[in-house]
Image (tube, rainbow, N blue to C red; front, side):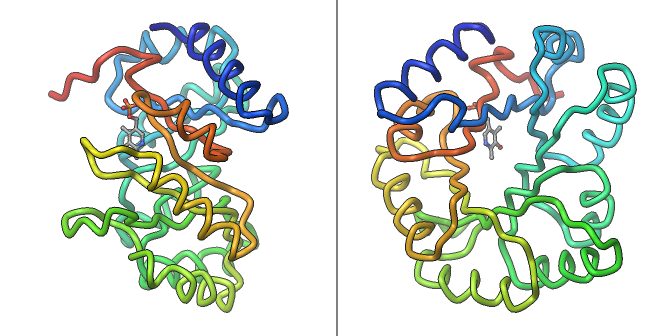
Length: 217
Ligand SMILES: *Cc1c(COP(=O)(O)O)cnc(C)c1O
């Protein structure tokens, strides 16, 4: 698979779903990928990337931004509260607001800085004990408490359980977003981004289908 093939598949899925061109943003997930692969996608003109680790992103993106100009980088991995300050300085969006203590920390940082990255609340749609995210039944209340904190929440994010049909998870996330008046839906990865687009995804997070398999050191 290649970057241009992925773009073609996204365009076809957007059309098949009867959605408008440009209504789905491709986040190219570059975590732990060799730099030459990331550069190739930058050279192809892509300007939206996703990272899972604050330290890795901090070591990579300041230089790449100096070289390539403005590049949006979204945090899609779990965020420790003690890394939140660095994260808000580095990222244009955080997709993993998953607990009250992090929301409170981000609200304090937003107040101090006068700006805040775009924020998504991660919902544990599969209710998996080992997975981060707000439980579905707690999500409405959590959104309300984020709004009380003046946090600019733009949408919801989920990572469905591995090996399960993802469509019901995408549908339930879309329903939660809709009833709370949230437009953003961060859902869909290499294996299922077309199903996510059919279910209304606004942000898909695609790594290995663009860059190849990740090899962890
Ligand atoms: C790594 C990762 C992705 C990309 O996964 P692929 O299967 O390589 O497309 C998407 N979302 C999150 C949250 C990830 O951690």
